[in-house]
Image 1 (cartoon, rainbow, N blue to C red):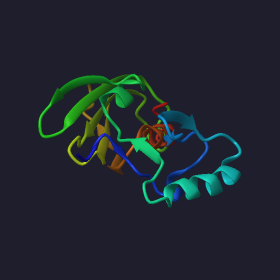
Image 2: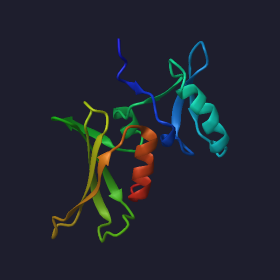
Image 3: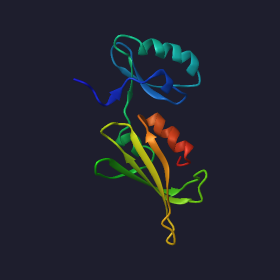
Image 4: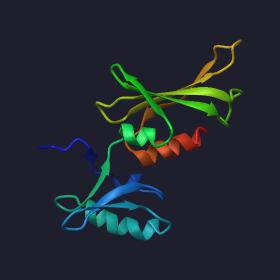
Length: 149
């Protein structure tokens, strides 16, 4: 039976801070790529090219999203999350915002992040990110780039 909770990453996904699991022959061990990423990539490439890959990554899920402070608010076609606060959003005049995140739990990849300004005189909103996001490490990078964390 296929396990949809995990996938085999490509070598291009590995970067400092990337979280993955490595099979040691008996069980899966949690790992995070450190500063020696280039030496590690050769080892990882070996594990990725085996007949049965010994490297896996957990798809982005509710617990990953909530680990960044988002609160689950419901489910329609997608899962929805909210995060409130003051954010330093690059290229934006909005500061006090409600961040809404939409996650396509069926494909484990689609993410849309929209910021709504908390100003009674303004109903301004900005799409901060729309695209793919397969795992927690990618989400962290995106949230950092758009100024949410």
